Image (cartoon, rainbow over all chains, first blue to last red; front, side):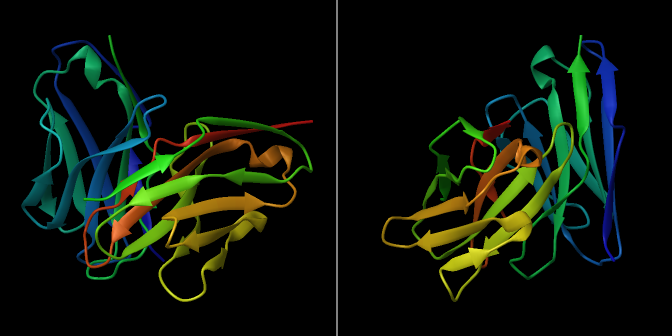
Length: 113
Length: 113
């Protein structure tokens, strides 16, 4: 069966520090991968998605970037965090070529102080 | 482009009462529709999905939803709620053949004893 791992679960970082959140998927090949951010009362905002290694689509211009160095690995990064980057970050995957539901990781609570 | 509107940000209801969480979408193409549930500090879990066929869709935990194409709605219902149903519920849409899933802002269901 497929599983998705996302870490860390919580993170407190000072303003101006770098960020690296990692997500890996097991049990499937060539998944579509997604990063969402959830802010209180604002639902899920799609940040990035990837349909293959090295292929990244950005949905919202911002202080973040994403990379997909391996088929089942998706990384969210920032060189210098802002206070406004605080939130709950969720990684998700969906089967390639099939319009099924997305499966989510447990999320990372990021607090920038 | 698609969009999703969840008409209620919070819905308080007494235990064993029925509940309806409303969702409207807009899209110029055919869509797939989803409802997800999120418990505190966790990722999202799929409740049910509409891909095609019968417009009444049954999901887990006794929930069901009805797809109404003319009204572009996909309301979620449960005839009798439990305390354990307290959570946030998200309606989502993706266009057939597309890569992205777009989420509504969420509805917080609060079940009172």
